[in-house]
Amino acid sequence: MKRFLTLLILAAAALLGAAAHAHKPSDSYLTLKVNDNMVEGQWDIALRDLDFAIGLDQDGNGELSWGEIRARHRDIAAYALGRLALSNAGASCPIKAGQQLVDNHSDGAYSVLRFSATCSAPIEKLDVDYRLLFDIDPQHKGLLNLQSGTQASTAIFSPGTAHQTLVLREASKLAQFGDYVVTGIWHIWKGFDHILFLLSLLLPAVLKIVDRQHRPSDSFKTSFVDVMKIVTAFTLAHSITLTLATFQVVTLPSRWVESAIAASVVLAALNNLLPLFQNKRWMVAFAFGLIHGFGFASVLTDLGLPQSALLLALVGFNLGVEVGQLAIVSVFLPLAYAIRRTTFYRNAIFTGGSGLIVLVAMVWLVERLFDLTIFSVFV
Image 1 (tube, one colour):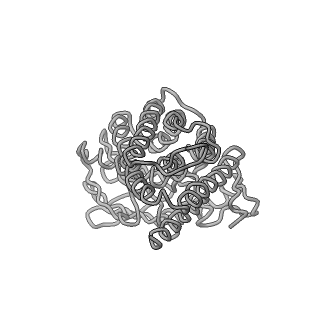
Image 2 (cartoon, helix red, strand yellow):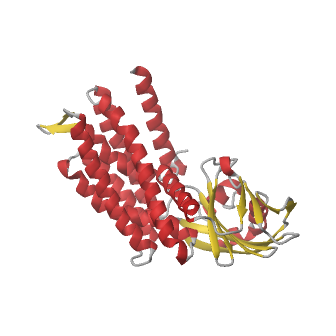
Image 3 (tube, one colour):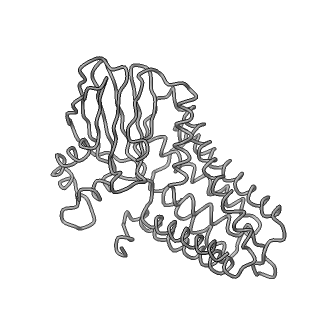
């Protein structure tokens, strides 16, 4: 039991520490358009990631100006393209940097690097070696959209899949679907605000309120049913808004969405300390799940998928989010139920954990509302 409690404390500390430093998982968006032996590329890389890697903020004021970015265009291109290699039939395809722009994605400003590559022969299989940021951020992912004529396929690059061979024929629907499922799983596992919102709702599931005091739940079945209500409500809600946003029926400004997600984490955790909803947490999960759905949709929007792939991507990505979510629940619930009677769970994990989540989410809320970076003051 002591070993288990120690591991649980370390896991919680690691999660909160990582959460304090991340609003959104570090992703870049790479688009390659292949025509015969030519490749036209566009690479969208977050300015915050580039600033961390090569230092764009020259005056150290915590803000990036257009002048600072423009002055480092050559360095940005050298850094990025030095970590991308294309080859065809064993022969390298030299990459030439092109125009550089700045564009806003759902989570902030990105450098848009356009480039071209010429191969010695018509391309049937394109070998892509992707190593951007892996040396300083092992959690970084490169999201690739490969287009050839009317065909499109996707791939995800990580430290374990840095080199991939892409066949220029339309990937099977099953393979594409699998790619989107994996993208959804990674998004929920790396989306610390989504995880903390879910955990805030799960923490009381193994407890009950008696005379305004939290007491251990009497049965696992009761706790399980409570969790299923929460998960079902959250799933239904975010599926609705994820669909609406993906098909651009309803769109909201990203700052509003990200701020509202942070506020949802604050309220969900605060409800554990000052119970307002008690037996209606599933209603909280549904109400705020609608907001989280818009946050999930930002990933598919940023991928720039063709209309023909939207439905497949939507279903696969949403399924991936559910798989990732259920994995968290399946680990948390049995362990929490096993130690629900301990003072450690009630005081350290439930009360202390909820308090820490409130503090972290409050910082997120201020950062997102006013476009600040508060945690850099403390680290």
